[in-house]
Amino acid sequence: MKKIPALLLCLITILTACSNTAEPKETATDALQETGTSSPFDNYIGDGLLQIFKNILDVNAYFVTDVFYAKNLTVDESTVIESGGIKYSPVKSERYKSYAELTAAVYSVYTDQAAKKILAEYSFYADINGVFCINTSKIRSTPYFIDWSSYELLPKEAGNEKCVVDVKLANGATFPATFVNVNGNWRLDSFCTGI
Image 1 (cartoon, rainbow, N blue to C red):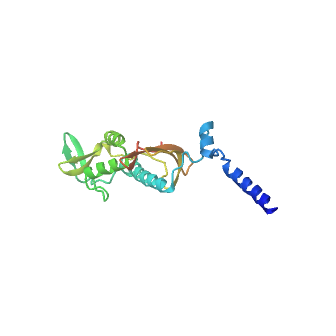
Image 2 (cartoon, helix red, strand yellow):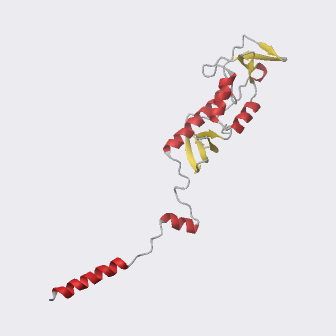
Image 3 (spheres, rainbow, N blue to C red):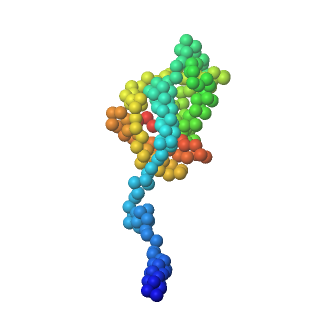
């Protein structure tokens, strides 16, 4: 008989404990949103995406150092083609065999707006009667002291449509680079010279 009250007491205790429904605990994310504090993951950009950005910046660096800004693609200066009173020499490039190939490469790295601006600002390349040429009066050899051989990407702003990173060069100089998602492909929104 003594066992029945003890069992009854255990049963009542269990039922009482089960009937108490606790309010759901607030998550860390909820608390951060309520206080307006940002999470350390707000600007997280994964290693895979950072590698894509680095690959794009490597091509940008090539455009800066060897195609548009500091110097130009190699030319055959022994041949001169005149068009509209301007002297051109054929481009001798292993990478780009035509002006159309160069243009397509620029559009594959930059947004349409940035690509148009780059091609307009550095308009010394042309297609003259099917020959990829450069205006010989605009051949460049600009002193350029930015070392692109080693740089670090520091995430600054992350999103599905736009990401911003700071590019930190070996000499400590830092500048922002903005990447925009264009139909599932990331593009730079400007020509990044580091200057």
